[in-house]
Length: 184
Image (cartoon, rainbow, N blue to C red; front, side, top):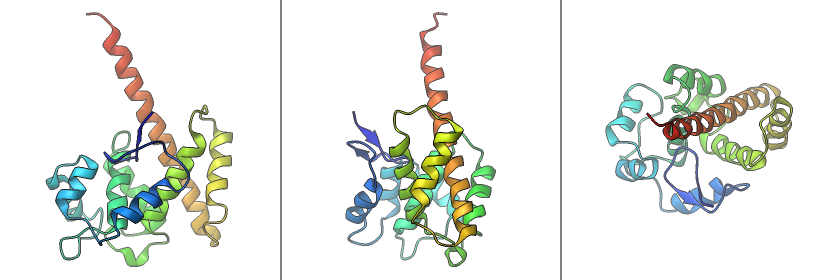
C-alpha cells in the first residue's frame, strides 16, 4: 500500500517515524522550492498559495523560493482544509506559533510540527481512534521534543486537533464512497 505525506501529492511507501524529515532532507538539499514545485507537490494551484501568502497564512517566500518550514505550513493547511474552516486552521496554528506571517514569534518550526504529526499518524495507523489512545500517542511523540511546558501543552492540543481533523476527512471520504453505492 502506498501512502502520501499529508497535504501533499508526494507518495511514500508508508508513513513511518521521521519519514517526513527524511523526505524533506532530500527535497530541500539544494535550497528552497519555487512556486511551481510547491504547486506540483501539494496539488494546489499557484494562485491559492499566493493568496495564502497575501492573506498572511504564511510568510512571503524569499527570492521566490519557499523554505522547508513554509512548505510544511502549506501542507498542514492543505491537509486541514478538508475538514476545518480556514479561520479555525489559522486559530489552531496561531495558538502554537503566534502571527502566522511572522516566523520570529514561532514556538516551534513548522517542519518539526509536521514531522511530529507524521510520527503521530504512524503510531495511530490501523488503530481505532479513542481519546485515551490519542492522548497516549500525542504524549509519546512530544515527550522528548519540547522542554517548555506551555509549548508542550499547546503542541499536544494542536497535534490532537490535527489527528482528529485527519480522521474526520477519512470518514467523510468513506461516507462519500458509500453514497456512490446507492443506486438512484
